[in-house]
Amino acid sequence: MKTAEKAWEAEKQELIKINNQDKQLLNKLTKDRGFLETRVKTLAEIVDENEKSAKETEEKCREEVRRAKQQLEEEKIARETMEKKYEYMRQEFFKMEVTNQQAIDLVVTKKEGNGE
Image (cartoon, rainbow, N blue to C red):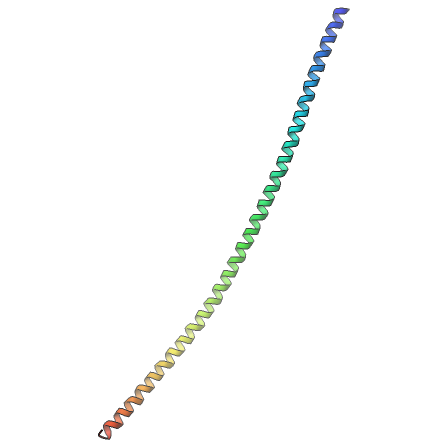
């Protein structure tokens, strides 16, 4: 009977040892799981933050492009207005030049007609 008790005691000790190893492994796995869950959560937060930052940057860029297009349109209108004013003034100067030339020709003709 003593041999059977020793065998049971040895088996009991082996099972206790295996149980303790399993507990240690379970504790390690639980700790690792907690670490990984924390890491995944942190990475998810970083991804969310990066996506938010990217969206904000994209919105800023879109706003800058919109303002640039608006400014370009305003500059285009201002340029067209200036070109029209320039063309009008050029035509006015041309008319004045023609009128002045006619006046000069008239004066020269009168002087020649008077014998001067």
